[in-house]
Image (cartoon, rainbow, N blue to C red; front, side, top):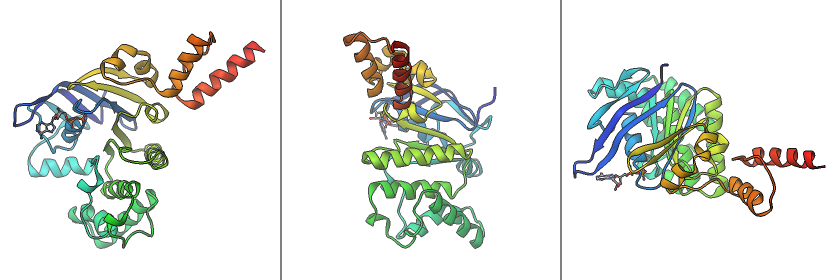
Length: 280
Ligand code: ADP
């Protein structure tokens, strides 16, 4: 089996001696949408910084399309064309005086023609729904809009893999669900998407596969169902069940129903309707 992104026994120790990643084996197939779940401090951001070569492993390796990252200038340019990383805080990513200049920055640095840069910027802003904001200074935008601009900046590089560190952090519920829908659309268009989050309510709606990380290690990996059925690993990682799954638990335990478990509203709704049909 070949993976578009893979880490093998990845360890990372910060210069102050903090051993953050302790043997991470993380595998993503082309076209997947994978979520990395874990509490604050688990090591999610540190792991993501390895995916496009910003950090170099203390031990182990990162492979992109089956080939280990080379940490020379050429190798790093190559990996950053393939893997786009969206930071948790858009203020760490957006720095140009206007939205247009910001989104154009990456493609300009690739040495592309003016026409090609214009095409990419236009398409990227359209994809994230930020057309018409070209001349705005980014610091006049809302949190959700800034996040969109940061994503547009990455899209304009046309990477195959988009990695987003806590894409819904700091957004209101509408902003968060808009960003997740955008990522879902990008995934349907063929982009491989990797997100980190501790939002267990959003994950099952969108992710094909989930990794659970705690204290620098992967505790569990599997489909949404497999991961949420492993209540012990979730508890260890200080995570909870999605609220809708918790409701099913309560209905079954306290109200003596016999509902099939589900992890999204759609799934639980179908299970309730099925249950009612059988009962009536
Ligand atoms: P997460 O993204 O899951 O919240 P991080 O990767 O940000 O986790 O942090 C994991 C651990 O690494 C934390 O204990 C954090 O304090 C530590 N850490 C992060 N950055 C540094 C750094 N530059 N130097 C030393 N320790 C760091």
